[in-house]
Image 1: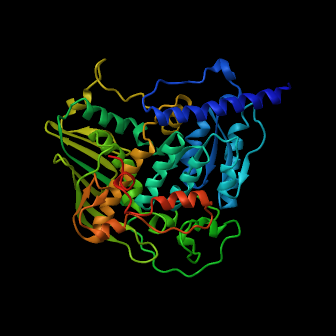
Image 2: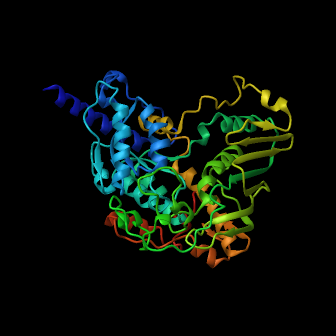
Image 3: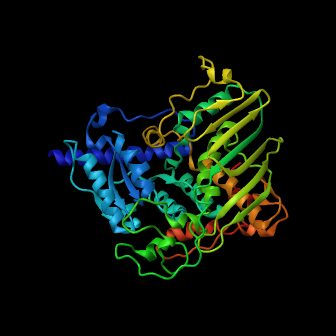
Length: 474
């Protein structure tokens, strides 16, 4: 047997192990770790690395998911990329190959796929990173899970709750490792704030306030003229599950440029807007600190305004959520922060700033052997890879990410309907509100989706299903 055959055999053996580890995680949430020993596959062998396929190669993929993410980690290798924009795919390929050119075991060029389904059919890929616009997240995550790939997915989770429910049930059914890609838990600023709360430094919580920035709120873009589609863009595939609409630059992203945020972030056909996008980061921290990752509030009410025109997402909001025990959560557009308010003081964690508290002594706390410490929390990508290697759940599995999304989406629904909404966890429905319940689902275009994905998605489109399959797991 030559060396190439040996490497291929080792890779296949290891790939089978990794899939088995995912199945173990699905069956026993707190099972013992099952790490692949280096002696089995070779400490530095290419077969010892988790192989990653990138679906979507836009701004976030290049900056956060490649340069600051997978390309820095020795236990994985990005082997394939997909994008509907060939220019972006070429940029990503250049970035990846430049990073790997420093290694002696370069292993050849990057595989590129114009259709994400071709990438998912590649048996050499263990896991995928989904970095596409929000309207594509659910169908692609379902397709990846059904193909047996471990799934790391960008926030915001999706654009409709029942689409997200389809994702959660798919990763459970197929036993793959999964994570929502929100990096704030890895930030010492935020995990220290949660560490202080969990160690009782401000006493029992009374209220939590979450703010998100105004960065997408100040611009108004009205109706636009139809423009020629750039030659490098497969626009129909970009639309995918969204319905047909004329191409204009402000609907998609700037051609051959990564310098600005894309227009689709402000259009509800493709994204719920700032309320779910930035909200995914900050509410993940809030729910973690509150120990409410698997519990939804019983009510939400508030006010907000929407942009009018092509860009039509929320531009202002003031929401108040209440939990069954009376704990309240306020959500506003302001600055990106989480403020925990307890009976003995408060802690304020703002992105890019220094942690502050009602009393400086609160921040001087050093965890002892019997205290909780989050100082060694892994990065989001490293946590995902560890989950694959060990079969253990990630720090933010997709069920948690979905609950974070659902909470933010509840606020959006309350603003749109202009009324207080009450959630019945047992029934998986809003109480006596047909309009709100009708908003739980959203029709999707079937083009660019394989039939097994269409069938799976459609199972969760009917809001009259039994409660076990209609609402977030409580």
